[in-house]
Image (cartoon, rainbow, N blue to C red; front, side, top):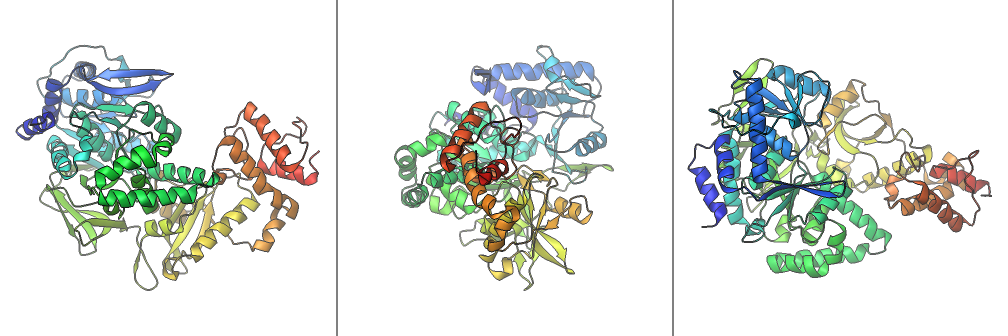
Length: 638
């Protein structure tokens, strides 16, 4: 029996608590590397024995501070790190119930959570003057074995107007999430990577989120695997961590995959290689659909070896996308490149409940979330939403009125609209709150409309239902920078309206609106219900984005400038290695686009060579935006 099966067997026979998870991990792992971090050119490694010592020092410190507070809540507010994990287990070990604070939510949401749970303190990773905040780095190392463990944690759903839903999980439900990994391996053995489980997983998903807690920390930390922590959350840092850390596994939200594939396609198009790339993707997916393992080997080592080196590196083999709707084009691209992307499903209230584990690329490319795990049951509600029941679901909710226990025999209504395909795999097409009833009575999914539109621009694009002329109709809202110029808005409108005209009439948004206000998001997803409320309350100001006739576009800046500005923006994009969509008319080369002095010299040289001008850098007439350069070139450029 493989050692990972031994661990699952021991967990299955245990009391299925957080204490059992910790005990099994500690009895089996010591010198193995738990984490790798990259700071200032150095690689920082933490072993499992160091992790356990850290957790026990946190437990010792908390037990000294709160000796008679068994079962009380304590908050953890920090991003992923070994210290986060030490605080998680240390708090439980000290008999306290950790409240996992979503660091991306606003202060009212956090304050509401701390107030409702009456948290003893907030564990953080830096010194602060905030009341009740404790820097967990300051706990001294000291071995501590407590008499009792707490066995519940609290997660936050993404809240609106400062009132998130607080969801309680017990150790039994989290153990169920770990135990289901044995079934996952049987369905798709490639998740093991090799016989020795030489797995190196990117720890990007926040541990305070059910997706990150279950599939990253619990699925792999329990088996003593190595987690790689990116230096930051930007795409360059993530790609760096994948390559330098030789990552084999990476689980993330759709935004990560969509962004990476858009960037790859943009670069291929710039080099005139887009059609060649797409043809290779089609061939690769076809091969992987007939010979899954051989086809994946060919994609990774022959067809796309050089391309993979530019994206996430050549060691990455198993990926999962969850937490939102992902573009079908992205799924096909990822699979074609040999990154083997599987789509999964779960909610803060349900845990992770399914993932499409198809070995064939053609099946994965159908973009379903697979069949429910064997301990989970799916069915339809009368409204067509997905109902879920099983051992992975939460045990209670917390609000101002106290704790409310959930009957585990009851189905939970997810609010997600869905269908089932002929293979018994579930297909999600939108939240019930988001789905819009079309004029002909059919359900319209905003996610589907957005995917069909596929509008590539630097701002946020969102489709939602708004009251238009007395009925709820689909509207497209696009977020733009305050610096966006009139000509650029006109060009954007032309792009959007052209895309809308390509849709079936029943799917076309009835209005196109733009805003310079912040659009609420969580984990890369627009919070449509929140945005709708903000628009209706006037807290987000929108205006209709009118289409300008093509022959009138030049009049916005004047014909000469209009003809020049797009070419200047291409020069900006080339020098800065950015997508053209990121370069706005009035974007400042340094402050908005991150340019520096040497690249500024390069920009001047490229523009002068392109337009045959002799522009000079003068303090009296500084040129920093595409519009600045275009106006100067239009004057004669001397």
